[in-house]
Image 1 (tube, rainbow, N blue to C red):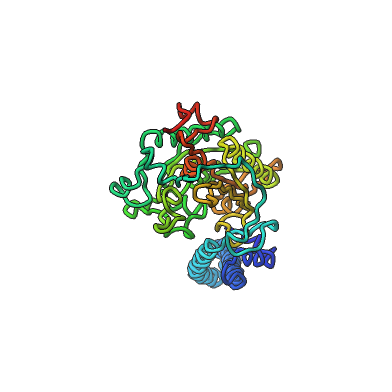
Image 2: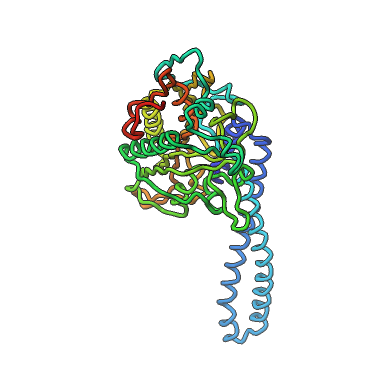
Length: 424
């Protein structure tokens, strides 16, 4: 969440940034934050003043009694009692103001960086780069859901029977391809210096609030109500929360973690070509990269993450493009985000496979994730994360773009992991 210092010292810039994200009533919300913070601060000041007076009077009562000044001592006792009663009211008011302030801050998204383009939605994103191999398919090219059926790779109907729509069952070489991609992505991350984590796939509410999924995405997460636990939408949540309420040493930064997990999202749609097959699922596999860094180094970390994801797509021989997201299409928590999309020749459309984001201090402030600098002062860290990569649409693009009359060709980089060169 935004810091009070950020809001009070750069009020106009914060409002402009929130308006770039199309946050409704930005000026009014920020004004309310400042009002509630002033109330909390003034209450705290009065409480501190009263406590100081109580301490001062308490020290003088005994001396007054020794000097025989009983009336003055009793007056001091009466004043102390009055102050203590008043302090109870002030303490309640301060707690209420602090809670109201915290709840307000939870509703405010991160402020985008200046280089984030203006825009309302996906159509306003800026294409930064295009790359990869051109694909030429047979005239009778099939979409991945038909290929999956033809080669008995994925059974969508069986998933519906077992669970429901959006929960496919991978079979035979389809399951082997999934496992091959997971191991390939994890090995590439390890080669780049990432430490692998195997986290839980359910988290408590504090973890959801820590990375910003709560309260913003509460309706889009699977909630286990009896235990008040949430199924994770991405490994970002448990891995980043490793560093909640932690003070790191500057020498530890940047911290680089990767994790493979299943991911769960309730918001997946159920109709139309955009959600058919693997295009949008309720449960899917993903390898995630998470970095914790110093503010002055986080831009470099972000670029290194972008280079890593681009390298994966190049090794998979897929046509891709990199988009700089506009303010209206960015996530609630991101300050700067780039999306990677791969092109599906059979569907004639771009499929998002990764978002790589810099959150600045937004998540760290929620998490109380700090580091101690060379001067032994504590500062908020910067957090970053990105998919490297999400599997469903990668699988869809691999199946569609590599189909031949003889079968589906496996990219060279994956052959050692799959154990086969062609799906036939």
